[in-house]
Every structure is written in C-alpha cells, then in structure tokens.
Amino acid sequence: MESYKSLVAINRIESDMPISNELLSPIKRKFKKAYKIALNVALIIKNYLEKDVPEDEIGYLAINIQRLINNV
Image 1 (tube, one colour):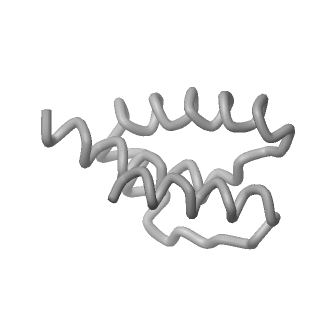
Image 2 (cartoon, one colour):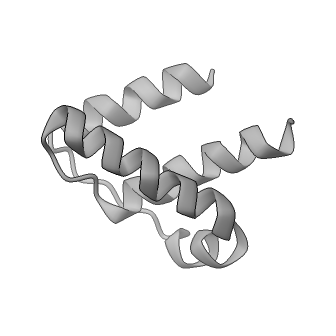
Image 3 (cartoon, helix red, strand yellow):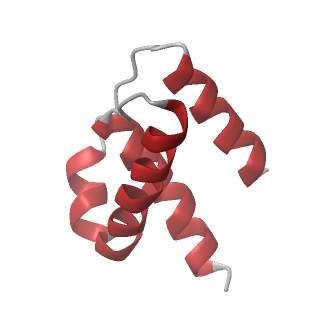
C-alpha cells in the first residue's frame, strides 16, 4: 500500500497537480523525525524528476514515513 501511495505522490509531482495539506503544521511538530526524513526523500525526488516537491506533499510523505516507523 505504501508503494501505491508513493506512486500517486510521484504522479502528482510530475503532473504539477496542486495539493493542499491542512495538517502540515501539526505534522511538522508531532513527527519531526519523519518530516526530516521526508525532506531528504523530497530532495531525491527533486533530483530524479527535476521538479520541486511542494511542502504540502512533503507533509504527506512524512505521514507515510511515520507509519513505517511505527511498524518497525
């Protein structure tokens, strides 16, 4: 399921689809480690796709990363 969500995110970034994440501030506060990892993932995606990753998308990446951390 996580790989599907990642593909959806990459498709949004490639297509320049607008995205909004009202939970961005709480995500950054509550999931600091996951958000920091998401920033690094966003940099990799940016280098690969040659497109900026919106901060709202980074927040969604952080949620998925936090889910993975919780399952370890």
